[in-house]
Image (cartoon, rainbow, N blue to C red; front, top):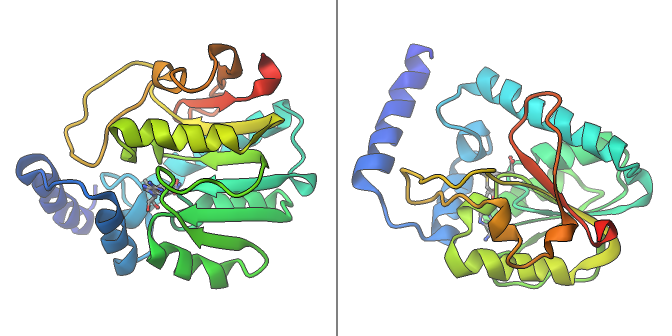
Length: 224
Ligand SMILES: C[S@@+](CC[C@H](N)C(=O)[O-])C[C@H]1O[C@@H](n2cnc3c(N)ncnc32)[C@H](O)[C@@H]1O
């Protein structure tokens, strides 16, 4: 870790693990997104920019592989993203030829920043735990959002997702295979069992990680 990054990272770590500020999702994310639109906003803060590029790159390569394995051609499918953040996955969807995309985020600042970056796409500020998803979507993408939606709010969010799925829809989401505690107030990890409280177990498959990205699930009624 470079000195400049360390000077930024350690104070933020101390605040997170010692002061443990109360997590109010809308305020927390609005504050982050209002400040900037970088990996410091949405990525792993322990990594610098290059580290985050490598980390995101592995997950992106795994997601691309999964879309290919599932024979999902995004040129013909509608994609809905929860927690679009700074648009990393929006860019991937655009690179894959996706024409119909709607990105959402709890933070108004994120959405206001994303709109001009992707003028052909639609964006809306929504709290995924509260606001239903309008319509039905072929592919729903939710990368590293699940751990920031806690307790009953997490299950409410999953119910909204389930209601927006057709028999052939796929949800791609990060998760943790084994329950683990989090040292910070804004992270609460979710396992496959948590997803299985809302989705039938037969719908849920762990994805291969050929490129060493973080664990992901694909969830679809098509597997039942
Ligand atoms: C760790 S960041 C990940 C952003 C993006 N998915 C990525 O991988 O770069 C989590 C994102 O989820 C958004 N978010 C958190 N809680 C949310 C909620 N309840 N509804 C919608 N978005 C939420 C945050 O504003 C933030 O942009």
